[in-house]
Length: 152
Image (cartoon, rainbow, N blue to C red; front, top):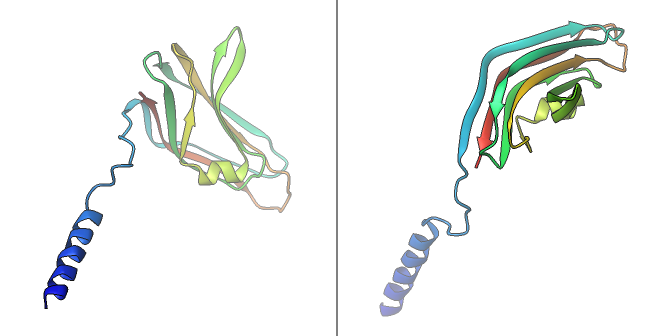
C-alpha cells in the first residue's frame, strides 16, 4: 500500500510540473501597430494577356526606434507571376522592403518580417497581376486588411 501511495505522489508531482509554464519559451516581443488599412485595399481582375500594375501611397512611417518590422495582410492571387511590393524611394530609386512574388508567397504568407530603414520614410504599395498561362479564365489579385508593426 505504501508503494502505491509513493507512486501516486510522484505521478502527481510529475503531472503538476508538466502543467507549469515552459521556462525555455522566449519572452514575448513588443509589436507596435504603426500603420493599418482595414478592409479591401484593391481587387485586380484581368486575363492572361494583361499585365496590370497599381501603385498606392501608404504613409510616412517612422522606424527609427524599431529593430525590425512585420507586415500582416490577407491576400490571394491565381496569377503565377503576380506580385505585392512595399517600397520607399531614395534618389528616385525604389527600395523594396517587401517583395512577394507568385502564388505561393502571396497566398500562404500572412506575416512577413522585414528590415526597415532606421528612419522615417514615405512608403508605397505596388500590386502586379500577371500570369504566364492562358486558360481563358480571369485572374485575380486581392489584398485586404493590411497592418505594419514595428518590433522592438
